[in-house]
Image 1: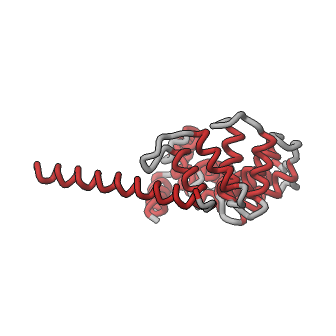
Image 2 (image 1 turned 90 degrees about the horizontal axis):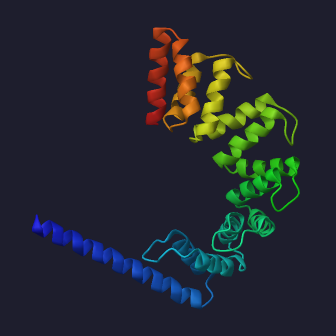
Image 3 (image 1 turned 120 degrees about the horizontal axis):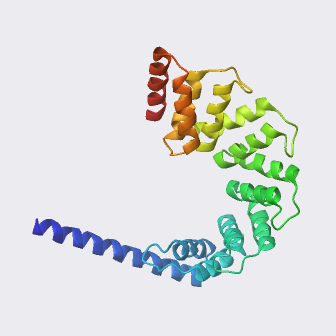
Length: 247
């Protein structure tokens, strides 16, 4: 046992040394103006990782150095710092401006964040049509959160013409990637027959997947769906749900 403990201590010490070397290497690159190194150091200070203490203000400084050199991820993260007021005074206008710069480079999460800015009217005038434009760009790149909210916009006809078919299509895409809200909504659609043929088995499958992510509303709806099914239907639904979870 003592040998095992000593070995573990040595492994941990080696890991710390590698982290120190990594930070030192990035610092050296950053001093020479390397934008990616500045971005990675920003992440370290933002997260308090790799042996670096968490320092939001230093993270902002590093992100800015990288963002001004065009690193899209740094631009997006800097936008988030401004939006949340982390390490810098909260400023929605600056947040939206940095999101836009990253979104114009095609970064999906920034496209989504810019869509949210237009949706909420934070830092830009509220404009649901522009929100849909940016949500769609991110959704088409496969971002589940954007797919889910784009589906919701089609579902209620906000910023675009109401289209239950498009809503269903985007909910499915998001749900298949594990978005709990999309799974829940899709399950309710099958449960009620709204926008799709009523199917309690499919309802149970999707609601169960959302319920396993601890979404309370999904747990209640899943149990209601189960109560409306025959024993044979419920057994099939549970089998399908288990198969989908193993994929």
